[in-house]
Length: 384
Ligand SMILES: Nc1nc2c(ncn2[C@@H]2O[C@H](COP(=O)(O)OP(=O)(O)OP(=O)(O)O)[C@@H](O)[C@H]2O)c(=O)[nH]1
Ligand SMILES: [Mg+2]
Image 1 (cartoon, rainbow, N blue to C red):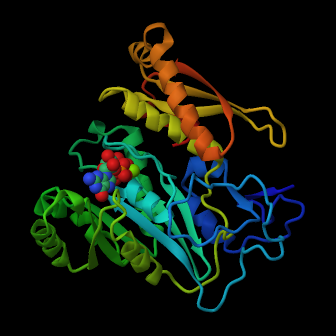
Image 2 (tube, helix red, strand yellow):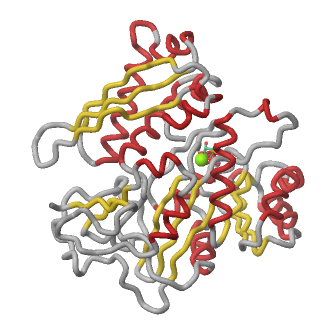
Image 3 (tube, helix red, strand yellow):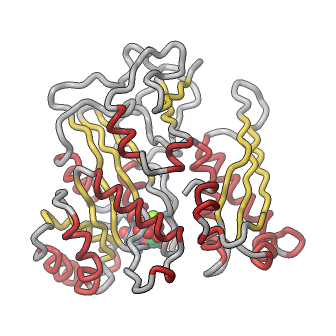
């Protein structure tokens, strides 16, 4: 057996050759105690091969190496061993929708884990991404964009409420916080909007002034000055996540704020979410990219079957259902003669294969789940 799955609600890796125990179990459980979706499938994939320190982008999303050739033995494999100077902890990435939080996460990881689109409110879950080097383990929590407060609670869907709750949880559990700001927005307005976050906790905060590639230096400096004036902001780091500019400075700031301690996850884990979570996210990203303004927001994706055929020449079988809220939306997603759904499937399959590093069959079905965004029960079922 070349790969192992570590379930958080047990204390041992299910790989029979792997006798490593999970430390800090209680802490990890606390992080997830209010996350229904995470509770359902708390899986850490651990592989034997430790990723090499690299300054160049990895060729594809190396989530779980598919074979252990050249890897270390389980005994050598890094999990909980660490030097007294080892740092480990949680860093929340928060900010307004569309500010570039997920792009920043992917830039730090040097692989695409979190989906990115030009539409606001792309991220709906708290995405847990584990970034490890020999001397640290930084667990980033990418979050949904912070929404404007509403006067009447009925103006906000249950989905919005859950998204905002995941921002709150991430902020509460973090050792440090990266507040990502779109530098091309008016800084005073952004500051007013984000003030509750700056005031919310005494967790150390850095403002990451993103998208500086769109501005002149003088404009960047003026914006930075506004955020330097906030008492709870420790530093302002101008970057371009999309162009990989100054991203290392963000990583260094985050790592310097982690507490001393052993790794909380296997060193070669990339995320705690199972592969099927990322498969659903990739399909959702393609929905955002393929359809007009409203449709993607009415869609939720659930992977209903995931059959692996490892060690054979057969492709993996993945079935997923796209839930919409009304019959008319179903027609739009499917398109004339199924053409729109076919194009969506082709785009999603290509990226899923890139992500998993193996070929797959992808079957897509579209179903109506009336007003799922407003129903607690439907949101539970859909993993929010
Ligand atoms: N020009 C430029 N665009 C960027 C940069 N970083 C991100 N973007 C773009 O900004 C858009 C939003 O990026 P995301 O990473 O999805 O933003 P987000 O904050 O995660 O958005 P939500 O998940 O909706 O809250 C995408 O079109 C990105 O390509 C940057 O440094 N420069
Ligand atoms: Mg995002």
